[in-house]
Length: 281
Image 1: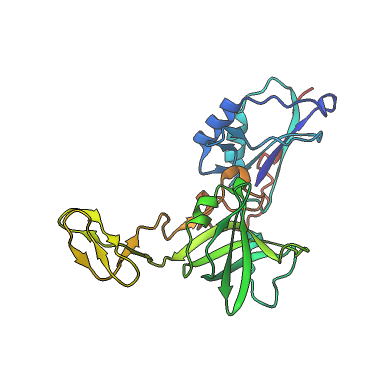
Image 2: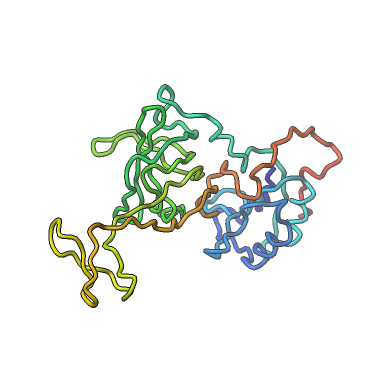
């Protein structure tokens, strides 16, 4: 549900002045029954639109009572016209229920797909990360943009990792193929990150140096020799879990972490509930 609070006609187009502190307090007091109201990392209010429309703010929540409680905590000096509560699909993740496959990956479509990372992720100018996955023999290019806050996660993936990812398809251009713009990364399985390295001298605790091609390795301090490189396992920086974008980067339908596992139940219209109110002039 979403409660939209409306402005009086005389205030249309004027700057909205809503106490950021009160929005933060409201979120703290009403969680988990409201969501995506304030971004704590960026200290940013997320409930006010930016255009000249008549809406002053919109609070998203689970039920009428939690939304009404939220409005009593918010602070503004502007006299508002009233509010109306709408039943909506915001925060449901409904747009990503579609399972992508080779037959339905079309421009502007949204959905999810499970596959294996097929190349090393690369970061480009601007902090955006690109990589590809293979699913049922089909390779799909993927993009994680810096504002999502998931660049680090994407960059930490390696070939062979299994992931379920979701987002919208961007159409191909002259310079780029069809791309899936990611809205979440669910890491299902992590490959071992193994590298070959010069051996370490156990006596001196120093890395040995190569004596030349096919001549083995030798400790420069004690002279001990070994024939081959050793295999080292590098600890992974990410875990097998769901990674969501930062709250500020959520789309309206994006399901926040607090709603993961929550069933979107059908609710009948209750005439006794305070669905709308027009304030006194």
